[in-house]
Image (cartoon, rainbow, N blue to C red):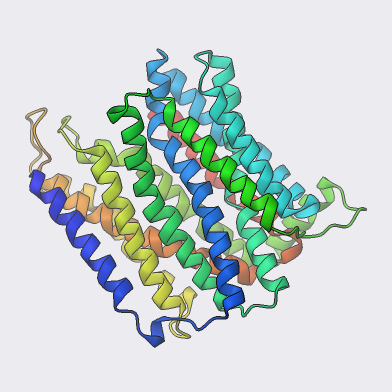
Length: 408
């Protein structure tokens, strides 16, 4: 069955290459040189920020286990991270709107670098502080950068449609190519060079520092609502009123929370789904395959958003149906394919079917991210953009904490 992994990876790579190389004038958006320079600057920074994030992901659990912590203690550390994102996310989001999005992006870099430094300590309390800092940083990553981009794009007078190009490229690079390269680079640091499980965190800190230097040297500040007479509670109230009074904003938040909730659940459970009897599966290679599928999705999204029809709201309905169907495969195969009772073998036939379904889901994730970014840019009011985006993450973080509590 080992050949199966290479066939899937090769097929996905060929499709992605074909999609990118076969784009014609209808699939491309004509832009200006000033916009291209602005877009490329943002993509470099965003890729560095995502590299700092992706380098850490595969080694967090492993690092904690090497320090001698059990599954329950590690679960508590993860819950602390998502809990801090839930508790402090709305606060840092409001501060980003009021004090400046560029400043919030720099704060993300500093906070995440400090979180990386805590990984050098085997003390549980220091690691807990690191998880709290990481949770705050995550809230900033998924709100401040996008908020800065949208405001700066509009301030410079670029066409609204051009935003979709930046969104799709950001996901193609940051959530696809960079994730694959970060996984390979982390593997070199830990396994090939034998630098230990803390090495990827040091590398992440370096990438974050480089990105911060670019932000400080080339980004200008922008704000949501810089009014001096508005405190945090007033901003919270304004964001809550905006969500409650506009059905589209409320539904957008529900869509985001529900889809991301399924995505995080998938992250926790794809390994036991593919190896229920401790089958030997190449986790790193499968992760790279998932990221390649996500690149395929973002490439499709860039084509869809370059055209006036279909609208994002229309094709995303189909994406949600396909996503739901792909995640039902473990249930269907459990009933239709007799499970193997032999432990430690290679991936089963049912596992192969599920892997194809999971790749389909990851392709849908690749379409989801740039599409939801475009909808957020259209429906969320500028003066409270970061605050509202972090409001959307509250139910998501509650859901993830519940799943983690039950899994761990």
